[in-house]
Structure formats: structure tokens, C-alpha cells
Length: 246
Ligand SMILES: [Zn+2]
Ligand SMILES: [Zn+2]
Image (tube, rainbow, N blue to C red; front, top):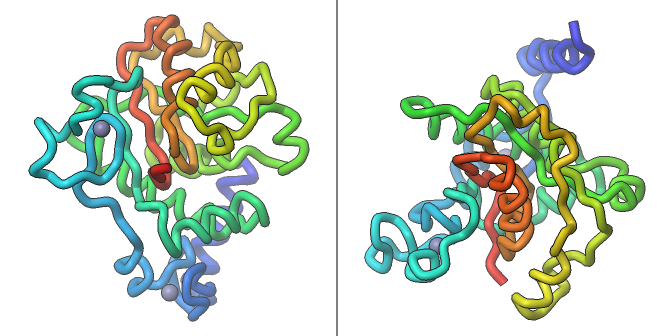
């Protein structure tokens, strides 16, 4: 049995016996993903969002759940699903996971994403692959892990969708997109930054999920979607823990 599954079943058994500390309020809770019911209910879940860019919008300003911006400038991918708004406590949980390696917080948010994804595809076509947004090897060396891949491991296992962690790679160590001011600078920063490194892994797929922790500008998701489209991928759904706007 793979070590990860052993760890998960052990954790499940332990959670029945020993309370865990809720990742938000710190109180004891008997829950496999370390979140008490009150805090789960109070999380900033997204409500009405544009189906294409994932930003929360007033329902009266959208046409068929697409915002005005996406109707004029549709993204390269098909849909963007954000689980949460990027506000407290989600922004703190994500930062703790990413920069302080708090894997409990990451596991908790990933489990909630998996629940939402399971519901989203329960009565429709299911994606064949989950592709985590890659980090450049220099960034992985510094951080020690790729947060999108860690989220992908949990979601893949729960939703029974294969995880393809080395299909796309980041060939250049680009500046963080959030540090660049203009849309043009962000586009240039990412030009040719992604390559499909394992074409064979995509051969039997036409519908994939592109997964990231936080989507801010969409430039990264668009740049990766472009290289996936060139490989004949028909549908690309972006999934993120949170959708932030600049
Ligand atoms: Zn709590
Ligand atoms: Zn939109």
C-alpha cells in the first residue's frame, strides 16, 4: 500500500480517537481535515461568480453567468472555479501553507476543494487529468515543494482523477506575476515560459483540470492553456482555492 494512503487511513482512524486542532480557531475537533463545523460554515465561500474568469460578480450584470469583460475578452481556458474569496482566514491559511509549510492548512483547503469538485462533476462529464501549475525548479528548491502539486495530490485521490505532475514544466524562472504592473508586462514575462514536457501523457485526454492555489491575473492560466490547446486539449477547467483580484 502506498505510504500516502497508509498515512491517510491512519489519520482517519486517529481522528476518530483523538481530536485535532481546528486550523482556524485552534479548538479541538473530530474531523479528518482539521476544521470545526462552525469555522467551515463561516469560511468565505464564493457565491455568484463569472463562470469564465471566476471573479465574484453581481448576477444581474452577467449574461449566462459570464461577466462583461469575459464576453468581450474570453480567457483561453473554458471555466474558472474558485472555492473561496481571497480574504481572511483563507488568505492566511494559504500563506501559512505556502510559506511556512503548514501542511494541515493545505490539506484542509485541498479537501474542501475536492468536495466542491466532486459535486461539480457529479452529473456531467468528468475531467481525465489534473495538471498542477508548475513552479520553476529554482522556486521548488527554495520552497521545498510545489503547493499546486500538493493540493493536486489530495484532490486527485478524493475525486479519482489522474494527476499529471510533469506534463507541463516552467522552462524559465519568471518574476511573480503580481509584481508586474501592466497586462503587457505580464504577458511578456510569461511568453514561452511553459512547455509540454510529456506529450504522451496527454494523448488520451481531451478534458483537463488546471489547478493552482491562487489565481490573480489569469495570465499564468492563459499561458499554460495556450500550450495545452496546441496539444489538442478541448476543454480546460481552471480550479483554484481562491480567486484574487488586483
Ligand atoms: Zn474552528
Ligand atoms: Zn468573467
